[in-house]
Picture 1 (cartoon, rainbow over the protein chains, first blue to last red):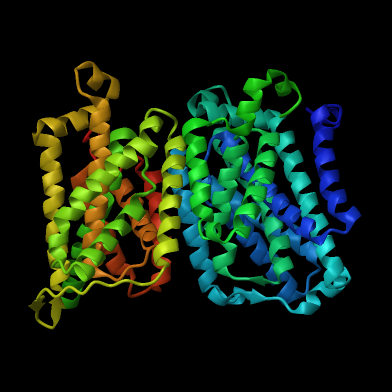
Picture 2: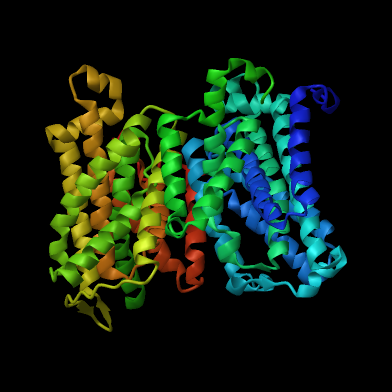
Length: 325
Length: 287
C-alpha cells in the first residue's frame, strides 16, 4: 500500500492527533513538568514500538534492544563532543551507523531461530558493553561528559530542552508511522507470516533470513536516535546508563501490556506504564521495587492476558479492529 | 611443559564445575523445551544459601550440599507451578518471557535486601602439590563432586523407572501420557531437579570464587554455551562442554583481558549454533 493511500485511512489521522496532543499539551501551558513526563512517555513509545516490530510482527524476542539506544547515544555524544558536529547531523549519523551495524549482526545471528536468537541478544548486550568499557575514545567505563556550552547552538539550555522534546516527539511519531506502514505493507505481511510459522512462510516464498535481518535493522534506527537525544539532554553518558537492561525490560513489559503486534496497544501501554511508574517512583517504598513490579506485571500478562490491552479491547468491541491497528 | 599441564588440569577442574552449572539448564531445556532464565539467579541462590549456612549457622561448607539440594528441588517445583506449567506446549517465546519476569522479581527483591556487595566464603581444604604448582583443594573437591553429581544424574535418567519416564516425556509428551506416565508430575520433578542442580552448582562455585547478587548472569551465559556445545538434556555432554569451555578460558586468559572473556564465549555460542545446531558432543536422540 502506498504512503499516499494510507493517508485516507482514519488510523493515519489518529496517529497525527496523538502527535499533536504531545506537541500542544505542554507547550500551550508552558508546563515543564508535563513536558518531562511526556518526554519519557515518548521514549517508551519509541522503544516499545520498535521492539514490537521484532516481537509482535516477526515473533522474535529481542532482550537487547537497549544496545541500539546505548550505541546511538554514544555515537551521537561522541560526534558532538570530539568533532563538534551539530546535533541533528550526529543524530542521523548515529541512527544510520547503528542500523547498519544491526544489519550486519542481523545477517549473522538471525540464522539462529526462535529461542536461540533471544539468547544471543542477551549475549550482544554483554559483548557491546564489554567493547565500550574497553574502548578508550569513548572514555571507557567513566564515559563522556558534555560541557554546558553544548546547548548554545540550540539557543541556550531552556530553549534547547524544548527543541529536544519536540525532536523526541518527532521520533515517536516516526516510530508509530513506521510500525503502521510496515504492518500494512507486503514486507509486514511476510513478517507476520514468519511470526506464525517460519517454515511455512519460507516455503511460500518469504525470504525469511533477509526479512528478519531487515526488520532487525529497521528496529534499530529510531531507538538509536532516541538514545542520542536522551544522552545529549543529560549531557553525560557512561556504559552502566547506556546499556541499562531495565530499560529494554520495560520496553518488553510495555509491548506486552499494550498487546504485541498492535500499533495502538503499544502506544497505549507505554503511556499507561509511564503513568504507573511515575506514581510508583514518587512513593518511597516502591522506588526500590520498580523492577519487581515490572516483573510481576509481565508475569501476569504472559500467564493470563497474552493478548494485552488491545486483545481485551478487540474481544469486547470487535468493531474497533476495523479502525485501530 | 609442566606449566601447560598444570593449566590444562586447572581448566578441566573449573570446567567440570561449569558443566555442573549448565546441567540444570540443559535438563529443563531438553525435557520440555523451556529455557529457564531464572537459572543464573538460582545459582546465586545456592551461593547465598552457602554463605548463610556457613557464616551465620556455622555449618561446615560442604555440609551445605544436602539442604541446598533439597531446598532447590522444592523451589523448582514451585517455579514450575508458578511460571512454567501454563507455558508448556506454547511457543518458546512465552516461557522465555515468564521465566524472565520471575527472574526480574527475584533479582529486584534480592538487590533491595542485599544490594550488590561482594560476598566470600572461606574454605580451607589442603591442596595437592605437583612440582612448583599447587592445585587448590577446593577446586579438586568441587570438580570431583560435580563429576559425581553428573554421574548420578546420568544413572538416574538411564537406569531408574522415574528417569526413564523423564526421558520418555522429553521424547514425546503425548505418547508418554498415553502409556500412563503422569507427565505433569514428571515435568514438575524435572524443573525441581534442574533448579536443585543450579543451586548445588552455585554452592560449589561459592566455595571457589567470591560472588555478588548479579554473578549469576555470567554463569548463565556460560550455561548457554555449554548447552549448545554438549547438546540438550545430556548430563555427560554438559560435563564435556564445560571442560571444553574451561580449557578454552585457560588458554585465552594469558592473552586477552578478563573483561573480554564473555564476548569471546558469546561469539563461540553463535558460531557453534550456526555450525552444529544439535550440539558438538551430542549424538542424535541421546535424550
